[in-house]
Length: 132
Image (tube, rainbow, N blue to C red; front, side, top):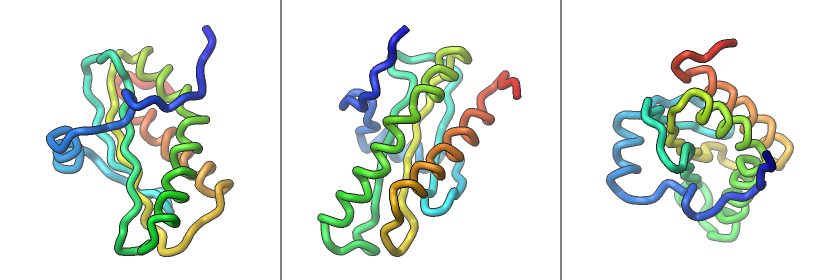
């Protein structure tokens, strides 16, 4: 089975109600510079993983800087999402995730990539019937 390293629009978490439910009922942890809020549902959906990326305007006034950080986070997710999607399909669950950037300055891509990997592993460990 070949995997595409893509992040299409249908995998983006959209809609006020879905986002509000994620932030009110989801669990959260911090893997600096990312705050990860996630919600695992026992039912399998057509799209197993939906993701939201946010960078606060309060910390980064210029849209250029916010957009660059969002691009880096999306790229790190895009390249590592295969393991998460495979675990979702195996466990027949679906996940909604929000990645919020909490650092006060820009951090290089290598660090974001490592922290994204750690965050994904922590989410996978929370799956029901997860074997270590």
